Length: 425
Image (cartoon, rainbow, N blue to C red; front, side, top):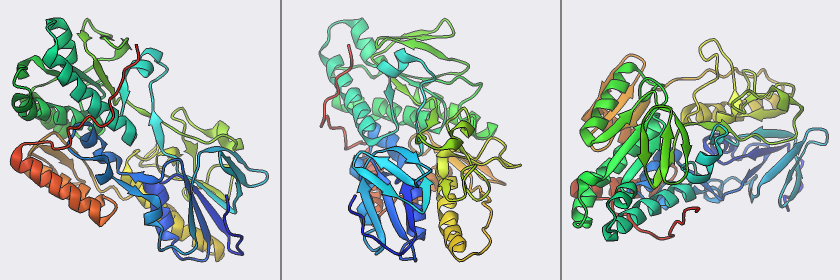
């Protein structure tokens, strides 16, 4: 890997997500050598992926080069690689570009889409966990519009203009609202030969309400906002199969659709090799103690979505969102320095800053510890929080400009088919 030899302890971080980059920042220019490894050379701001999918933002406005994040960290190195396994006996990790040893290892690999073993859905649906996947969805939506404009077959046009989103969590709700805005503002102007009423957006949720992880107040408000936008919400509805043309559910509901977007769940992305692998729970997360040490190890840690830290307040682990990952990354950086100095480690305690979701223009819901509100003010708070959380001043400026332009002109400027998407037959 061509990492310089050093007398400093080496900390290897697998994953450049929220946990990984905040750990690397905390260890910047400290008395350790840091090696950050990721199979992509950029950090993705996943909360705004849905806006790339719906042509609201270009991908480079929510992605940031990992090398740029660490460019002023004199003892930090980045390697573009895919990790295959961990050897806990020799303290080495094996990658597609070679082997590297470590004194301390931090696994921050996050999650991947969970299809719950349903091969038909995995084969034909559109996941949205990565930038390329978001671009695929954007291309498919616009290609469907173009194809619908030229087809004479009413049933074929209906299938092209039916969009099914599975999963009523924040991702599904936000994406449904964004696609509804395409229907309400873009379709009438760009595709005058199509009837906006022919386009339908279905949001299918297996639970009793949308946004099940948020308060009932937020769920009710979000459902009302979606209804106002024309989204057809079906709760207690599970998708049994999808063949690329027809959606089959547990109910009598069957939908003809060329597009099914899967936002129904995630599972951990662990790395093979640890003896503690047997301690990973059903969601593929490593069991960790209050210091984020993987059970059975003192020098191997797991952070963020891949870590299961059971506490009194969070018996099933912390929410798999950005804030726990950020906070764990920052604390572990401090704890590693305490460990090197022989000091007592500090236990992790999650500071819940609340949760929020947007449902289109001027519509959002916010749950704070003592306050719950919805509407325009919540939407403004949502925009401010996400804008400030973006990595890089340039990205903040670009996103702010795009949001301002979109708001004034009722427009989504990134509706480009740069890389056509071809569905499997």
